[in-house]
Length: 397
Image 1 (tube, helix red, strand yellow):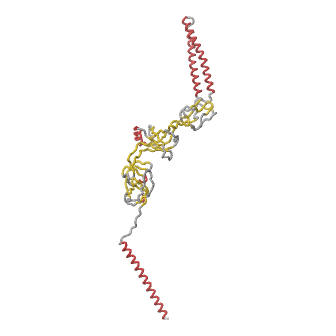
Image 2: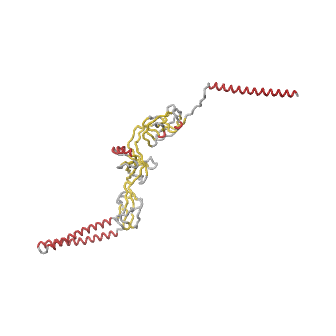
Image 3: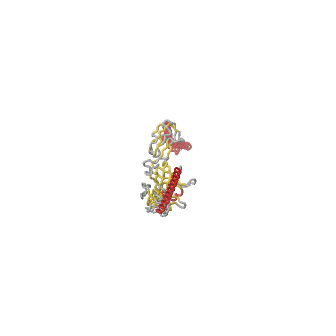
């Protein structure tokens, strides 16, 4: 019994001793690790290294930039004619197809000419009858003139003969006018094109009864060679436009849809005589030869007026510009691949490019994408990207 009790006490003392040794070893290990860490760091705080920010960039270039004014334009026919009949009657024949091109003098319509031919024949017959009577009256005047000189007839009778001759002379003149009018009415039976142009929809078909000078045109002709493009620009450009028009021709380009590579080229030909007070714009017109008939009446186009050119302009992509509290700025990539914030003064912008009046020089590199993660001094890595808007993107690493 006593041996068992002594054995248990001995086991308890051994267990306590083992736990104490483990605690001492764990504590010593922690202290040693802390000392080693402190010795390796030299007592200084470890700061993780910042990675370079990936950005897209473009090179600042110098080139000649056109000075342009842009607006939305509407194509208008050079002239428009609504064809109507000047006489009434049955439409005997239509001599064209809808949408056909016609030349000045081409026959378009024929109104039934038979009633007008009959009227002309009647007028000519009346003229012939009265001409015969006039000739007889003139002969009587000549005969009675001799007789009245010899006293064979009374003066009153001679005067009556002369009056009758003068009356017949007036009647013949009236008959001539009636015959001429009948010829004119007959001529109106044949309707010709007054201009070169393109025909629209046919409003009156063969067999219809046509009313003289009706409210509705029988067909409309639009002259499209040449053709107008009408557009309006803010009145602030009026002085410059007038200045360059006085110096020579002002070129206007019309861009159809998204086909900016193949614009139609014309010349500014009209400036309205007043500014629209409701919109503050001035109406302009440009004339285009339209040889290929790409411009069509009613079509909307982008009108570009080129006034002059600005040589040696400093140009950057518009994506490079950032807006600050006081001015606009760009991030410039320096030779050590860090960036600096550079305030700039901008000029005109067009085609995704901006003219820089002050702040940059040709050959510098500006950030065009990724500016949100940048502050002055940030290290960057320039992503490789294709040429955009005439600018070569940097390939620096």
